[in-house]
Image 1 (cartoon, rainbow, N blue to C red):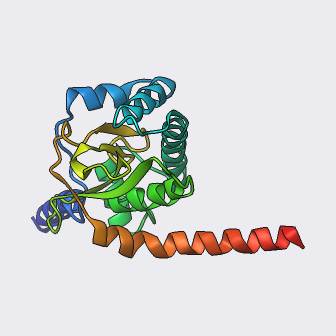
Image 2 (image 1 turned 60 degrees about the horizontal axis):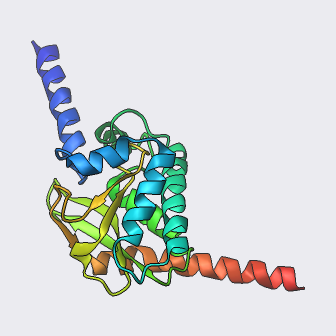
Length: 208
């Protein structure tokens, strides 16, 4: 009898861990799911076109660079995190300390850090937050044309498909996205500053 209750307790703890600490799944919008499920090359081309379509001020070359970087980094992060199974199972492994990273805000943090290195001129990066402060909170990168409203942007989500980039128009996605500028500045600015310092040191060494 004791074993039966212990088993139930462990199962309940497991279920809670899948839901806890943010990153919830939703039914995928058909357009976004099609883009995410397509081959990497096809997805890159589609995302490039979508980015250029944001506004006529967007550079086609910059859109291509961002699309390539986002897809490549998402694959690299999955390898770095050692993603296993569904994103919720990865959450569980991180929450119990078996894995170090792989929660949705960490995907957002690390992808933004790499995209920042592109020094975009016609596109702008944002931190997207949905259902902030709840167990169903989710975070993702959002890209807009420079100066464009957040709601007109495109979601870039590496967490949702465990390392296969999902992207969709903000308005088309099922998550109620809002811009979280405070979190973006607080979490990412120190990391970007550190990267710039390292880059400066490296350039100084080369010049000697």
